[in-house]
Amino acid sequence: MWSVVREAALKVSDYLTSGVRSSAVFKPNASGDFTKAFDKEAEDIIFGVLRGLGECLLIVSEESGVVKTCGEGWRWVFVVDPVDGSVNYEASIPWVSVSIAVAPYEEGVTLNDVTYAVVVDVFRKTTYEYVKGEGVLIDGVKPERRVKPPNVLLGYFETPEAYSIVPKYWRFRGGRAALRSLGSAALDIIYVGLGRAEAFVDIRAKLRNVDVAAALKIAEALNAKATLCDGTPVNNIPLTNISKVECLLVGYDDAILSKLIEAYRS
Image 1 (cartoon, rainbow, N blue to C red):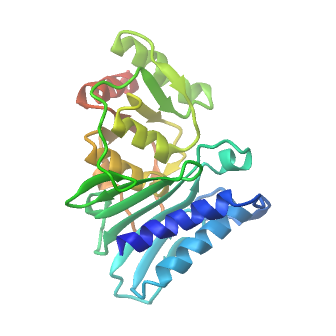
Image 2 (image 1 turned 45 degrees about the vertical axis):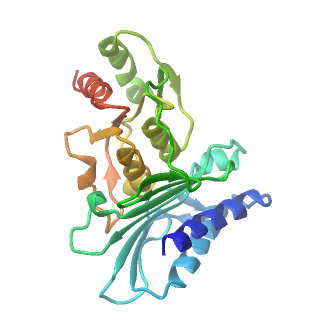
C-alpha cells in the first residue's frame, strides 16, 4: 500500500514538471484559499490512485476538504496537500512539494496515529518517507542527520507580526540566525529534522493540518522537536477534518525549541 501512495505523490511531481500547467482559478477551496487548475489536477491524480486501492477511505485534502469513498466503515484516513507551495509553482520557484499522511481510521484519530507519511520535493524528485517501525527514508535510504545544524531559521515572515518572534529568538539564542522564507512548510520542516536548518516558525495562523501532517511525522522521527504555541503537542493535531495550526514552532532539538518557546512567550 505504501508504494502505491508514494507513486501517487511522484505522479503529481511528474505532472507538475512535465509541462506548463494552467494557474487559472478553479474555485474557492475547503481551506479558505483559491484552488488553481494545477491544484485540482494534482488532487485528482492522487484521488484516482487512492480510489484504485479498493479500500474504504476518508480523505482530507486542502482543495476538496473531506471526501469519503464509501458511506461508513472507513479503514484509513489520508491527509493530503496536493501542491504545497502553489505560489512558488506559479512563479517557477523550485521549492514545491506534495504531502500525504496516512493513519488507520478511528474516532478522534490524530497525528500520533500516522503510520506512513510521504513528502516529495517536486522539482528535485526527492522522496522523504516515514514508515512506522522503520523510521525515515530518503529515496529508499536511511539518512544521516547533521550533528549540528547551520544557523538558519526558516519560516513565513510576510508581515511585521509574523516577523516579531525573530529578534526575540535572536536574543534568547545569543546571536542572529540567517532568515529564509522559502514557501513550502513541508520541506522547511523536514530540513529542520535533517539538521539542514535549526528551526522553523510560523505564527500567522494560516497553516492547516494538511500542510504539515506528513512533514511533522517525518521530522519527529528524525528527532526534531515541535509544539503548537499554546503548548499543545503536535501529535494531538486532529486528522479527520481540515483544522488550523494557529502557531507552530519546530526546533532541531529540545534546546532550540525551548528558545523558540521563550521568544514566543516574551
